[in-house]
Length: 461
Picture (tube, rainbow, N blue to C red):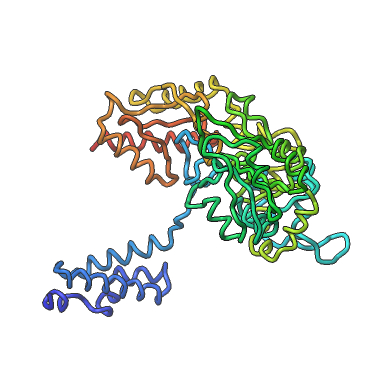
């Protein structure tokens, strides 16, 4: 071991290598030295574990690779051909061109984020979004924070700290990433009062749980799972009526949040924000980057008396969103107000595209790719914690089967992931499936070029 350690080159010897000298035109000297020291330390650890001493050549290779990786942004644009519209791992909703332009407009310089251009005095960032949300949902007031988890936590802290919140046992759910309603309750200081059973909760269960310490009744929409069979749950109108009877506010956590009727497109009906507001829910919380089709945000709409309390709480400042997302969210909401959501918002454009149109596009892809591909029946999932178990019929491009071995299909998927603009499909039964429904129109050329290049490389190997 000591012999191998002595054979390791010094920092000076590595730095004097000609290839390292060439790196100085690209990277700061201090950064190069740090990278060399890091690689040498890793080589020492390997030598102590019994591995041969790394050569200067190998260490320089590692330094070069390390620096190249450091300056290559890890967050990159990808093409989503997976057949999942709101893919959480891929950033959920893509923004409309107009929303992107609105973001760019405020990103490159200063803007009137908290400045009133009429009076010349300090303003509020809420004014850029509140009127639009109120017009769309019918709410008296609105507030936007970082995400829906923040919105729910803030609402519970303000409305029910050190008091009780009544929730159906079937709605004490985990929405993903370890975010559980019971845990959120504990963090907020509110006490969870579960009523009913996992599959059946009646409005009488809520009423029997009401006490002088009850601060709110809460409905949590099961947006990422579905319970089938013998089930019953109290509807939001019943819960709101009970709240009015006992003068208790209702907090409605819709999760995904939807402004359009999903049943029109053959999907399961998703509870709409407008209905909860019109029925009289005190505060309705939902996401900005799911079925709304905008940037990540936690949106709260409802009665002014409660929204004002949320706005004044110190945590609201800690949870607020920045100018970029405000700009994108405002433009997304304008698409709804203009009646152009289906044409402009990518999520709704994907949902509303007829299968015949997807089929036509899939056939164009197959004609370009060649004999290795064919069109097959498939299903597109909405995803992103929205409409669980509900899918859209689609046409997919299948690559594999008799034309390609399993190892070749895996190699193809890997090469597509490593493309300059990564292309992501899904593998089922050793066949790579690409769904045109979830690919933006302007991405076709990039996708087809990547697939043809990868297949060509595989055929040569």
